[in-house]
Length: 211
Image (cartoon, rainbow, N blue to C red; front, side, top):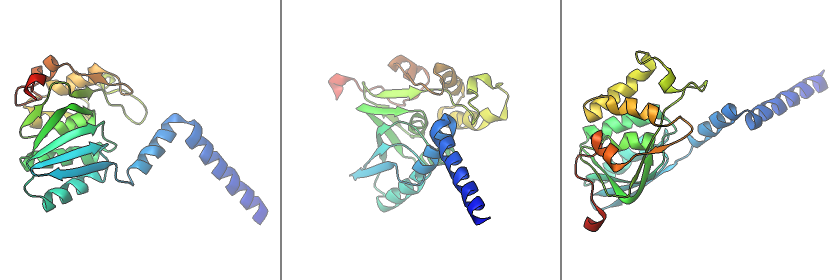
């Protein structure tokens, strides 16, 4: 009987490993769960600037609050390479906190932000970027792979993103633009004219000859 139970357990373990390895959605979910257990964001303080690098995850808000608490002179978050968020449920409240604290956001000519990183950039009280910075947007999808653009506009799944965009930019047109700009598995890199059109920056884009 014990041998039979052992054989069943081994078969279950092999089956679970096979699912994780060979079913893309499960493998991705497992990877995201793991990445949310470690610190994927790095912070470095230089005078009144806080340099931010890496993907946002569930640990990032506590990291950010701690570094700001220890360095109250910080005024601006300089976002270097922030390619997205592994946890929007952590990212959006953190972004609201950034706005409440009156912190600014800044992109250098070599910066790259996308997806949840772009959402965080919008939280800046003052939002400035140098010409050459890459700003990426795309749609989101649900656990079953359904794209945001295919969900009715009055569906409650849009509500949190609509409210956040209105809080940061005053209206929600930027949100609707993003979900049609590129599918969830791709990124659209915005042109400067588009960044200005949606009031993503509060200061003129710093041209290369001004840097």
